Amino acid sequence: MQYDLIVIGAGPGGYVAAIRAAQLGLKTAVAERAEVGGTCLNRGCIPTKTLMHSANLYREIGEAGKMGVNVTGAEADFKAMHARKAQVVEQLRGGVAQLLKGNGIDVLEGEAAFASPESITVGGENYTAKNFIIATGSKPAVPPIPGSDFPNVVTSDEMLDTDSCDYKELVIIGGGVIGVEMAGVYNGIGRKVTIIEALERILANMDREISQNLSMILKKRGVAVNTGAMVTGITQEGGRLTCTFERKGKTESVSADGVLICVGRRAVTEGLNLEAAGVESERGRVKVGEGYKTNVPHIYAIGDVTGGIQLAHAAEAQGIACVEGICGLAPTVDANLVPSCVYTSPEIATVGITADEAKAQGRAVITGKYVMSGNGKSIIENEERGFIKLVFDAETEKLIGAQLMCGRATDMIGEMVTAVSAGLTKAQLAMALHPHPTFCEGITEAVHAADGHSIHTMPPRRR
Image (cartoon, rainbow, N blue to C red; front, side, top):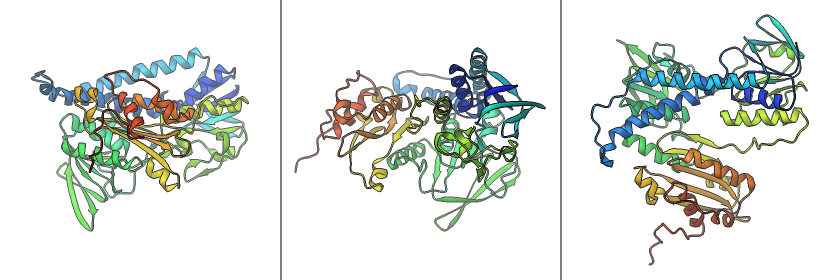
C-alpha cells in the first residue's frame, strides 16, 4: 500500500506523530513490533509511577500516626501492586489503540525493515510511503560488568515487567532518574536498598542542591548511597549476589538478592536495515539534522533513537514538530524547551538552565530561592527539605530556568515552562497571585526572593 507517511514505532513520539499527521490529512500508518505506547507506557514512565504511587501511599500510612490517624495491619502486597500496574498500563494502551483507530491510522503489526529508501516490509508485506519517521526508541544499556548475566541481575525492563522481582535487599547500579525512582519504590515498601553511582553525586545532571537534598532524604529513610563508586564485578554464591566496587582507592562490597542495572539507555536500530534505505547512523543512533531530517530527504527520526533527550514528552513534541515540518507548517510546539521530572518524594522538576550552568556560559543571572519549610501546604503534608529556585537573566530579568523540589513539583513545572517559553520577566511573574494554602505559593516567594523581598522568609540579621 502507498501512504503519505509511515511511522516506525508506536511509542509516545511515534503514535503522537501519526495522529498529528492524520489530523493534517496525511494517509498514515504506524508499524509496531510489540505493544502500542512504547517503552513509556509499557516498561517505563507509567509502570514506574504506578508502583511509586503505591509505595508512597504505604510509606505515608506508616507515618499516619503523626497526623492523628492510627493504622494497624497495613502491608505492601508486591504482587497486587504489579497487578494494579498491569491494569493501568492495559487501560492506557487500549486508549492509544482507540486513538489510532479513531484517526483512521493503519497499525502494521510486526517488525519493520527498510527494503529500499521508499519502502518497508512488515510481516512479509511490502509498504511504500512518500515519507517515513523512525521512532523506534531505546532500551536499557548493560555495561560489560563481570557477572551481569547472573539470574536476578536485571534491567528496568525486567523489573517492571514481572512481579517476581520482589527482592528483600536490592542493589541499584546507577543513581540517575531510574535508579532513584526505583530506590523510592523498594525503600517505600520496606526493602533494604543500596545505590552505587560512579559520579560524585546522584542526579548529577541536575542542580547540585537537588542532588544533595535528595541524597540526605534517601539516607534518612535508610537507603545507602555510595557515590564516586565504580562497580568492578558481580559474584553469586548460595542464591546471593555480591557487588564489588572501588571508591576512593578502596575496594568495598555489598550483598543482596537482586541487582538492578540502570546506567543509561541505547537507541534501538537493530533489524531496521537502515543500510537498504541509505540512512546514516552513528554509534547505533540515527543521525538527524534540522527538522529531524536524516541524510535521506524523505526519512526522518525522532525521540530516543536519535540519542537526544530521552523523555516521552520530548519525543511527543518532536513528533508533532516533525510532521508539521513535513506539511510545510511552522511548528506549534517548542521541542527544545524540555522540562525534566523525577517522581521521588518530594517530587523534582526542572526546566531551562541552572545558575551554575549560566555562570559556565559567562551569563550574569539573578537567583531567587524559597525554602519550602515555611510553606503551609508543605507542613500540612509533612514534606521534607523542599525548595523552589528561579534563575533570571540579570540584564533582561526574564526567567531562564527553574528548579523545584517540593510537593506537586511535576505539576507546577508547567507554569515555569510557559513562563520561560513566553520570556516572562520577574515583574510579570510577581503580578500572578497564587492561592493559599498551596505548594505553588512558593513560586511567588521565590520571585520576590530574587529582590530580597520574600514575605515568608526571615530577613538577614543586622550586624
